[in-house]
Length: 156
Image (tube, rainbow, N blue to C red; front, side):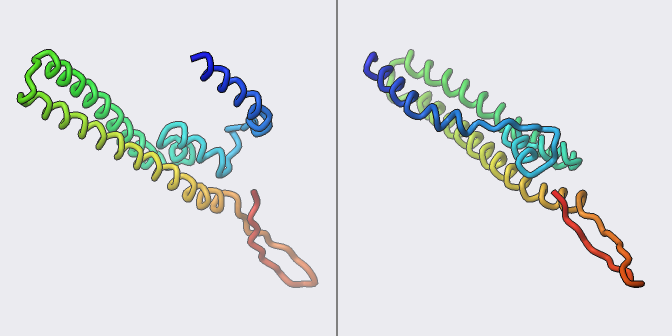
């Protein structure tokens, strides 16, 4: 145990300049791709809700919450089934099959939840481009040499 702790300290001391130099102070009030995507990394749907796409944001948040609750429920049921199986001491009873079934349900809920989360991050990043493009672009009109010029300017 002491060797593992010593190795951890050595690795931390070697990598700490890299870790500390990559710290970035983020102003979450600023609307840009990074901040909007960071909100969705923290919890699915937050980026969409902040952009104003509330229905999509609440849908992502609800689906992910159901997946989290389902995985916790399945894990607790699997743990209970495994304890019953272990206490019975009999190898050929159906409790082990119940345990395996509940564990498979838990893996399914975790997998679907992660897929929702990853898709939500992707969707936020792509939707943020459209949102920022629509919100920040302005058509500017200028007059030069008795002519009217229209320009479409994208600002960040």
